[in-house]
Length: 220
Length: 256
Image 1 (cartoon, each protein chain N blue to C red):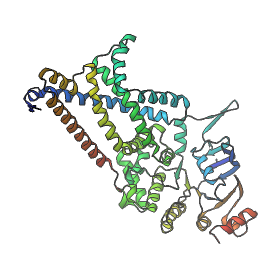
Image 2: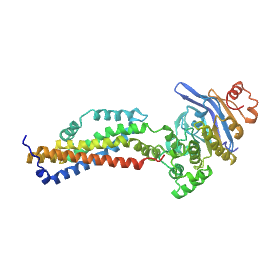
Image 3: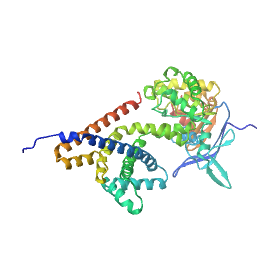
Image 4: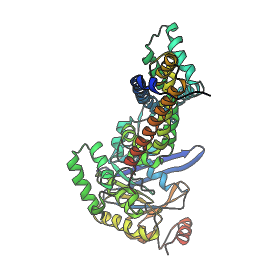
C-alpha cells in the first residue's frame, strides 16, 4: 500500500465543490419550501372529513413514499419530456424533490396536527373565528412547534438527497466531486473532502433547527 | 312582545344511534342566570354546545334574540347556514370550557386580544386596552404577559372567561368550568362568575356545584335522559323537588 494522501488537486478545485454545495443547499431550500406547502395542504386533506379530500391525498403519499427517489428523479427528467413536459435539469430536480418531500412532510405535519387538542379549535370557533383564521392563528403555529424535532431530521435527509441530482448532471457537490476525481484520480481525497462538507453542513443545519426550536418554545 | 334572549324549541340531537337530546324546550331572558344540572350523560353539555353550534342538531330550533341559529329552512329543506354566518352567530354567545382551552402559544393577553382583533376588528391598541380591563376584572392584570403553561388551572380558567367575555357576548355559556380544577382553585373561578352574575350578565351554566347553582341562579334546569325533567327557582325546587328523579339526584349530589 504505497498510497500517500495528497489533497493539492482537491484544494485547487475547492471552489467548484463550494459552488456545488451552495447549489445543493439552494435546491434543498427551494424544494423544501415548496414541499412544506404541498405537505401542509396534504396533511389537512388527510385529516379532512370528506373522502373526496382524503382519497387523493392518501394516494399521493402512498405512491411517492413507496417509490425510490432516484426513480422519481429519472422519471421526471427523462420520461416527462416524452409526454410533452419539458423541464430544465434544475427545475426538474426541484420539482421532484418538492413532490417527494411533500409526501414525507405531509405525514410529519399530520402527526403534529393530531397532537393538537380539539378543544382549541372549539375555543376558536366559540369566539367567532372562522376555520381559516383558526388554522393560521392557532393550529399551524402549534403544529410547527410539535413537529420541529422531526422536521429537523427530515430537512437534513432531504438536503442529503440533493446528491442524487448528480444522476441528471446537476452540478451540485456530488457531481462536482465525481468530476474532480475523474480528472485527477485523487479518489480518496475528493470523497473525503466531499463527505466532510456534507457532514459539516448537516451539523450546521441541525444546530440552526435546534436554535429555532428553542426560539419557539413556549415558556412554562 | 320583545324576543326572548334564548328560545329553544323541541331540540333533538343524536350521536349516531344514540339520541342525546329528546325534545328540549326552554326560554330565558336577558339578565337571567340559569344553571343546568343533572347526572352525566343527561345531555347538559350537549345542550350548551348546540346553542353555539359546536354540535350540529337534527331537529328543533334555537333562537337568540329572535334570530334562528345555525340552520335555514326553505321549502321544507333544512340547511346549515354558511360558515361565515355561523361564525357571526357564535360571537353572540361566549363560552368557557371545562378544559379552559387557552391557546398555549399565546400569552394571557394575546389569548384575549385574538378575537377582538380578528373577529371584532379592533385596532391592536384598543384590543389590548379592552383585554387589560377584563384581565384586571378577573384579577389577573399582573399576569397578562404569562403563558398558559405558567398559570395555575384556576388562573387559566379566569383568563379563558376573560377571553370569552371581552367579546361582549349577549349570553355566556359555562360548561362545567370548575370540574377540571383542584378543589382549592374552584372558589376563585366561582367568585368571578358570581361577580359577573351580580353585574347582570345573562348566563347559562352547566355545573356540578349544587351549592353554587342554588346561590347564584334565578332558574335551575334539571336534565334527565335527554329532556328537561324539572325546572324552577332553586330556592323552591331544591327543598321540594316535584319529581322523584330530582329528589334522588339532589340526595346523591354534594348538595345537602
